Image (cartoon, rainbow, N blue to C red; front, side):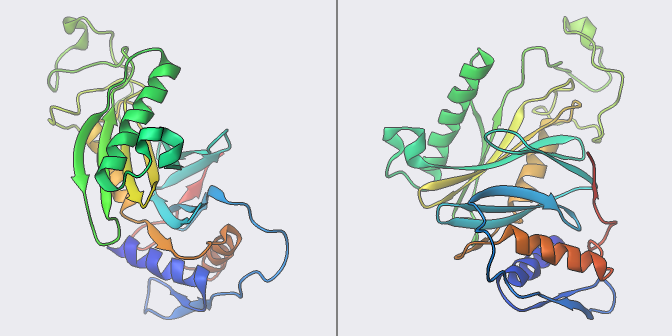
Length: 278
């Protein structure tokens, strides 16, 4: 809840006059600077930058304009084509969007959960071509809320070399699998039957949301044997921070707001500020 209130105030600052508040006493620490009136136009797309609590992801794709926060202690941004990849506390994260028409002719006109299920089939088939193996999507849950009319959580199984551990304390080699890496995963142990992949890399947790004919896609992959339940929880929490706007959101303005908040001594609510790693 604290993160959501922080984002609501933060987005308001990028769209007009407001004040961000410090964590102590509730006193305003700065007023939003004026919006850019001149200079080179910002291109559409999705970009991420260090925020107080992690990474602030600014998206302007078609008529979907959004701000999302990937909360974490240690974060990084890796420029890749066609979409940047983020690292958040060791997890590999991507944020993208796609129109129904870009998936398949049969997706045209689909909305809501039907569109999201079409996207899951499209994405799994696309990755199957890249990986050279079948990768059927595993639907986990359907979500709806006032801010997200339709949401879908699904899972793409990891590569064959992932270690399947039958129970806590069992020896993978006894089951015919290669031994897991010696380093313990950074997540607590779980007895979730769906969370027994404990090798690098894991499968990918997807959290998608439908906005008209466009799908917002967040994917989270563990790189150190994190359990599926932990990746799914992260994906749902991060998409839960999404705030949309009817207008273009300036990434430059967001960066200005972040810099001003940091210079004024503002901190992430409830924990130390995030650190940007190379």
